Length: 314
Image (cartoon, rainbow, N blue to C red):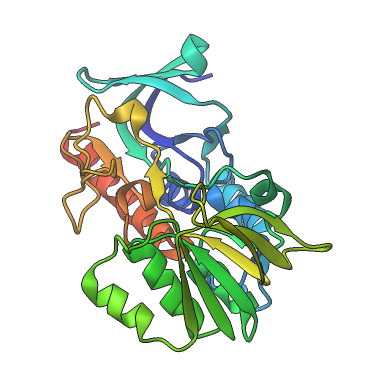
């Protein structure tokens, strides 16, 4: 097993595998570590209908397997393992895997570790994963045309998701824990003026129910107050919009992050604040969070790496 590489890719979502395809074809012989969730977030999505080249749609798992095979075809070495520490203060960079089981040195690194959706922590979120529970309206909203859905959250993201879904669904409930929005005023106005959206302030979700998928949600209004009231709503889809957490903890001592933990890059490139370290996909993208945009960023990162190694004579 090689312990010194020119290009190391951390993460195996659309960004990581696309970077691997481009890096392999540039003869950089990259090594890719799959991380804690091989294939990334897309493997938790059942049907993917908006990724170019699949007119009949494809499951998230199959799509990621196709990308993996393509990367391996051109020479990417895919390894299982979780990056547990890094030292980006030395060159070549030093990376530790699985708490010291393995170590590798790299002349360049592409970080594509993604961002994990935040969940409420209800057992039903796991029970109905792929059967009515989603953390991406743009990804899955199409399946809820002319149906009833609920969105959980009170910030700009939740309002955006609710408005997007209102263009597809028959009705959208927006479940807000507080008696007020955290969203910007313009987003609040758009939600309140949309006839398809009903805002449920001061409501918490207790659970979901349904035989072959989500059929409704158990809510409680004004939890803990004297007038607390339990309410059930009939829905076909339950969308989480309470934020994402970028998977950047292991890099925070070296890479410049924004206030919410996303890696800052010198756009339009994928360069970070450390020369030779590049970032691609959701880990550096708090705005779009789509498989196709992540893949595009992976392409850019691989091209940036090739140019960097060439300039440095590596």
